[in-house]
Image (cartoon, rainbow, N blue to C red):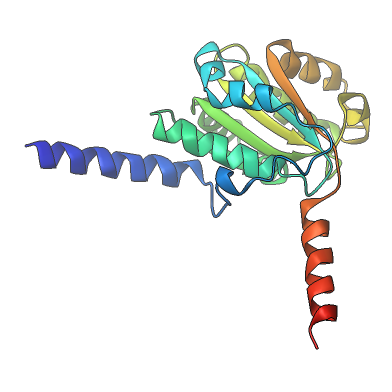
Length: 210
């Protein structure tokens, strides 16, 4: 009986991890905390306690490309799933492509409910592409349905005052940002790209090899 319960719990965890769509990612143990010029470790630790999920609050990681915000986000969702929460990770472009592709209002409503359902939803890479007003309205609907009910994690390479470049013609942009930041931990990360550092180190090793 005990073995059957364990097997059932293991299968449930496997399903939840598959549903989260995390893909491959480096473990948190590999994160170089000393590399960023600015990163508030206490705030990150507080977020990783997962208390924000029960409160329906948000987390926003703001950093240039290559500073580990996606890595931190995937580790955060992984820890949330291990703690028994449902989760989903998706890029902003894939989210909006999916919603834009629904050809009836009923189909769109079903997809919106899908994104409203997980206890924690991570939307990655907001700010790398610009979108029209319709896409902004779709993202606003996702955020509004989760507002004060379900947690959202956002990663972005832009400060909020620069989001007018992401949604240049959207009247809902200010309201969207207000809902995201009303109950949120905002975590800026400053410094140079890890990937650039790793590429530079690789080049140095190659030049040093006779």
